Amino acid sequence: MKRRGVFYFSVMAALLLAVGLGQSWNVALGIINLCLISAIMALGVNMQWGYAGLFNVGIMGFTALGGLTAVLVSMPPVTEAWSAGGRGIALAFLSLVATVVAIIIARRLVPPLFKIWITIVIVILGFLLIRVFYEPAVEQIEAINPAHTGYLGGFNLPIVLSWFLGGVVAAGAAWLIGKISLGLRADYLAIATLGISEIIIAVLKYEEWLSRGVKNVTGLPRPVPYEVDLMAADWFINLTAWFHADVTDAASIFVKLCYAGLFLIMLAAIMWLAERALRSPWGRMMRAIRDNRDAANAMGKDVTWRHLQVFVLGCAVCGIAGAMLTTLDGQLTPSSYIPLRYTFLIWVMVIIGGSGNNWGAVLGGFIIWFLWIEAEPLGNWLMRMITLFMEDGFWLKDHLIAGAAYTRLVLMGAILLVVMRFAPKGLIPEK
Image (cartoon, rainbow, N blue to C red; front, side, top):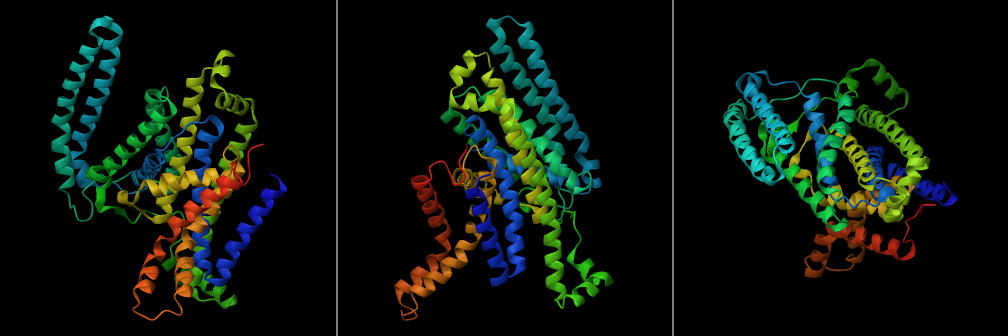
């Protein structure tokens, strides 16, 4: 990393320190935790775009799969729901597997002329068979205490395990999607990934037996202590007394520090692996494919297979970040997954930081999320300064103050334009 990168990270650290001193350390640590998660998401996108030139705008869907995995891993099973409809869901899943296997076998045995017709017949029969088991099971599961459960629950395992399994689930979905769509041209690939992402979010919203839908899953277990337990612990009370700190604020800060430590370890591990991959012969090959896929193909490189590799890796990293984010929030809220937050902002992070450079992606994650959080209070302050000499009730003053909440949208667009104009390769460009 060059001196310029060290300078940018130093400025970022100074800004976070200023927030801690000027606002509160709770706010500063909250921003740091989300910056760390955003940096991991940006690393995943940078692997796809910066390494191989893949334009994936379905980041939101893979992040949501990671969040769903956190629920399925950590929440306790709802025994009544399993008793009522678990068998039906299992049979529906087996019917789906049988349908896929039947299609694969039939397409290998049937003459080419009849492949499409036999595939259509098997799909229709499989769909009808799945519905026989699926629909009654769903009705029975969602009828079990719908105010609090109404879903199957999870496996009651440590939630940190879901971070790794979230990456595995997202990678599996990416492999299936990539096998179908990676042969498409760049713009068609973007449309396909965006559509698939919306399908994933729709499943989370409406399949209540799986994720409670818009009723949300709350109360996920934590990998760190609870504030209430800390405030009742003698060692923590003595520690806060020694620092002359308020016990309530200290407990919240301690919890956020624990999260920051875990997230920093994950970011460091992913960053180390990403750097090793980028500097390896595999990384040089991926950049060669990105710069001229026809030449790489002529040199004997299987471009589609290599694209599939990097697509799966990038989505796996986004799945890990999604599970971490759900862990931090303590709940799964399917309606909160919107393209602005989980696709557009991540792309802005990569572009501003410097695509193709892992350090640039991390820097972009910190800068953009910091500005996204701080833009609204700064906008409120700016509008109040501008309207300081206007009378209360004046229409322009009310309009400007009410519009301060949209400062962050204007700021994101302005920053993107400025950086693209004066640093088109990003703040820390690729070598």
